[in-house]
Figure 1 (cartoon, helix red, strand yellow):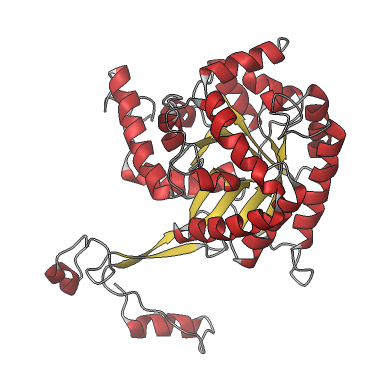
Figure 2: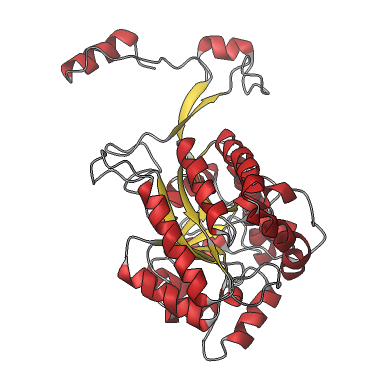
Length: 396
């Protein structure tokens, strides 16, 4: 607790005299904003649907039919306005959004995110094969053309009056949906585009489902593994976000760590679509960056709080399955995660995965103040964590 006059004196010593001060009330505290490293904006209308499918069937029967509707720009506008507001209301100050393959709809998504003042990465899906005939790009050339158009549009949202060292709130991100949906020609072109601009972030899926991995193995027989496909095409680097990673081989973990790419752990979706339980502790021990993702609508909640809860549950399941619950205090593998670890994954871990940890993720001096004001007091309209007499005493 800091007395008001002490704060005023400190500010005055720093030359800050005419400033507004907001004093936190008992039961209130600040937390770095949540970072959602993986979600699909056009899938929000499907929340709660298709829970009985596994990944590939779910894409076929639930996801692709919905995403195809976003060819209608007005449908996209109405949907995305609701989606972005809902994500922000969940306390997500930075979000990695997948759009659809539609250029105009994805431009709208970027516009709406920017208008709402959210920090985000917005990408148009690249998918020119192994997709239904009503929802597929006609060629690699068209996919790259539209991707370049989206990059230009998103970058035009950045105010020219801002100094060059200010990170734009909304940034473009290359989004090959997953290896299955992209021809080698398209992956080659995306790799060349990435190579020409090291600042371009990349997001895609990896090793979410065993059937998916088998399809990748058949499509890319010369690749040693799934991660090797992305590495071959120059898409595995420090600003690459790999969603899921449930079934990574040891060699893949080593490669991902070497390339300094990050994993978006999506426990709600992994459980909901019966994909598996990712060994996140092993990834952390190998030095791989890990953040959390909601993965709507494979995940049934857009809240990172829900992702935190299911990350905790998943870590306990992995620990119990391996019989090493609580045996080591110096590693993460096969251990249930502490609250501090869970919060780190939801904030600073996500910033590291997005390669923006020098700007957000904590309250370190010099970073942007992406923050949540949390009110747990008895008058907050939520279940109080303390009895009224505790709040009056200032107990924590």
